[in-house]
Picture 1 (cartoon, rainbow, N blue to C red):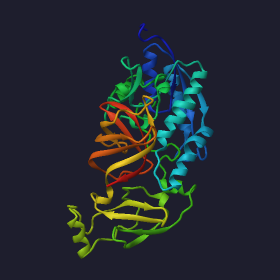
Picture 2: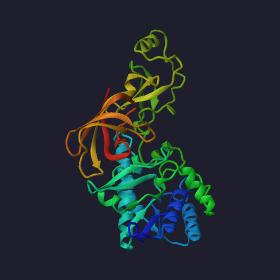
Picture 3: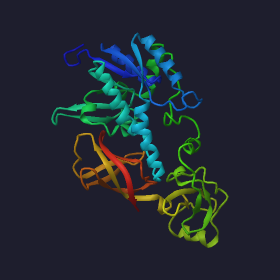
Picture 4: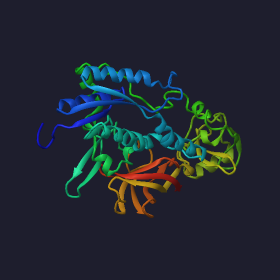
Length: 383
């Protein structure tokens, strides 16, 4: 080890996946004392085919054995249910679409897990996220940077991390491409080198989302209407739909006709025909109405500005107002926008180009180049 990078006790969150496995390997190669923790965050139906942490723990333990490091199994299910899942249900019941992975990172992986690791004598924690941390000597602040692999960057999910959390965190695979991570895993003979990446929320897994939500939220059917007020069908409950949704509406056979089609085309929606797909555009909780529109570029699906609250800034204070870029959902290109701070908890974004299906409950995350500044929860948007 060098004076710049002294040997440290690093506790790695080992999930059973290849990214955290290579994280542990890289840190051990750097000479750190590496200890692994496997986090169990859900147990309501953990023996089901959709979400079994037992299989993941077996994979994590096999990796720890190959690397020659200790592993501890820690149950954070109670904290997860109180801090993440309860909020998840409240948001859906209010008609919004939350992102529990963001809350899980802020409340579990970088709070409950961090606290546990520090009790074990850790000087740093590490996870397999594709992001980077950089200390800026001119400001004496820690910066959250995008991962170097643009197709895997996870800074969007980490934007609520604060200075105290970032100062204790390492993201080794954030410096690598995913292909390189896979290559390293295969080269050193990790048992999970070819394991498929996990998708979705851990407590939902691969199961149908509506089936899962139906266990916790009562169905309240109501009308599905188009932008002219025609009743096209019945929805099963507003909580089960999200803005921009195209599948599962049950109105695929409904089509615009005659003068109605001409009216839509007159609005400048090129490519809209009688068989164009329908999209969820609005949810009216008071009247229990699901509003749908035909055509991807319908004006109801486009927003030039949004308001967000529950703001969280990486630097501890809101960035200077002005030209930045933002994502209103994961896996979208950074969209140029202007920031206006309403107060320390609320802000407004005005976009250069209209944004598609901006969704209340999702996060608007701001960037200055490769630096993730933080963000907030979308609560309103305007055309």
